[in-house]
Image (cartoon, rainbow, N blue to C red):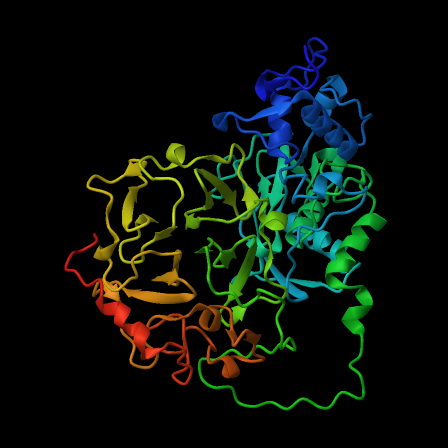
Length: 542
């Protein structure tokens, strides 16, 4: 055979070693795909050279502390079948090539005092033992960083913890005893941690799976740490019943994100003038930043895609960057690289959050995520997941008027039926049915039970009852996306909601707009309002 001959991955068998209890060769390839070592999907007809597959095996062997043979041998396959965390090992474009050390996922909490809630308990140990183990696991990180943690029982918490079996509502089902023990979501996707109730949880490792050890590892993910390829580190991916404290690798990682324990007790400088308080305007949550000039491109409101995920976080995409948005504008430190955080190169055509899933569309393929973690088996063809829906979409959204899913391309739109898993009969229809919208769209999303449409740096809110673009006497539509969604004016970030005129996005109650505040910030030229009259037709959408 010629060197570098390409073969379909699923049929590559390297150094089979006879019968043994470890996974089969094909399961070894599946393992590499699931945990981020290779980008492989047989549905897309992926092929890879034998050299590249061997390199992926060596990367896993390095990560697992094995001899780097590049072969799916007995030892390697056996290690793959060991109990471990369900999160990916390779997160981001440069993770596979980095030196031996900790890895940071790319997101962090914007505060250092976090709350957690145990939403459900295991039946293996008492509630008191469960809570003690969870509290002890958080204390591991609190002792070596600037963070503090507090348990709450009734109010909403930053990190929610639950025990569940198999499919449990997040699209990433557990696989039974002694395999993936638990998984957790990174800060920008909510930080929740789920534990497989099929495991035999115990207070000590000699009586079962140590809840304390696994929880301490998972909470590392909840705080923004990825898996480490330092085998002695707590953040190494495989379960280590002999854990005896955080490794220096773990400590360096958490301190890069949240500082050292001394930061919690550092006194305020005596030269700092006393702070004075002013009574805030009703409906406004004051948020001050010292950043007056944003990084290049930070205030580009010409979104390619925008979506709000299940935990209420909103993400907007433009080119190879994305923003995380809050009620006052963009979160500090954004935009960030889409490739580094989401693992995607190039432009995102459209995005859709529906149920537990977040879908990102590129060309003729769809990438699916569960709270920011890529779902195994993706990407897939759009036509395979959403039958009857075209490629190269302009936007996708859930309409707040009826809760159904819509796709838009050019001057046409499709309504999708999740129950039948195909486009409804009678579609596509002309986009002009949506009264008052421009001829083509860039992005759309459902945000706090209202639907918003974006085009060329401006946005429109849709009135579901009148089935047309909403009317506003204070600040007519369309409005500037950079000002009302990113918190920018004249390409400059303002230091408070009062300066931007944004404030709380629910402030303008008389207008009925869920995303705007001040009547004194009108950025739209009067001539642009004529676009609202160009597409009026009389047709219902339901």
